[in-house]
Image (tube, rainbow, N blue to C red; front, side, top):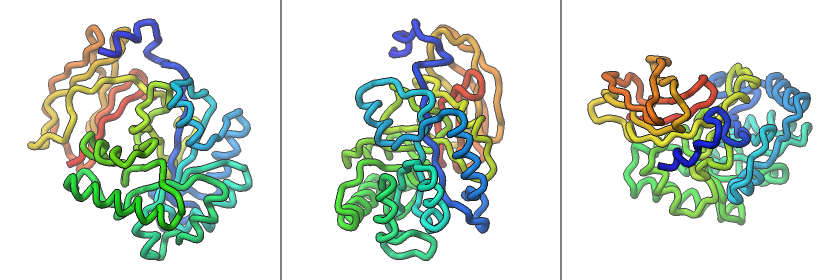
Length: 313
């Protein structure tokens, strides 16, 4: 197993860890759960400047990953999902003011059909002068609930419309709602994207899966200093891989660096519990009813060094 090759490395800190953050709306008080106020946005940007963080284009991180080079600890990349009008009218000027690059992931149906709360293609083209534009599906449906054919069709439709309107092929993709599993991931990969982004707490280092990039959400009232503490725990998940048919989680099995002796396990609605690790193996028997449609199972050493598994009903 690959983690036995990591014996010489500290399990708390595998190489350097950069961070990718994701926003949705800006200065839109009608939708607080997905909104970032302009005051808070500027406070976050000021914090990064004062503490010597370098905001880089996501493509710059991708180049490092492709070369298997360390991602510097002070590197931060910003992404924005959906292409809401509030980004164009409220957020974009702040990014321009600080000269911070960004990657905007377009919900194609909303833009193409001119839904009222979303940017149109001309506004997206204007924004492309200051950041990168990529793909966020056509219909913004929960992909795990679609058939293979529906996932493929949705992605192809969005890809073709995007290329027609923008004049180039998208290089990156972000999952709607951050929801995915291996089946979804393997279908999306067929479109030769350079990278795929999720919405899980964690960081980016040279060992990151380029088709499963962690992005930390910055919505509502957040503590950026705390979010920057996240590091990626290297975990080979064995069980669970999918939402159990009966809705009962009976086992968590995984392989980690054998230097780890104690860890913590998180299950949505149940919180954290301490677990033992033996020779790099986590093997926990459970009887937990999963209470949500979207459940997170996580393994951590200190709440911040973390690996996540999503189980979608």
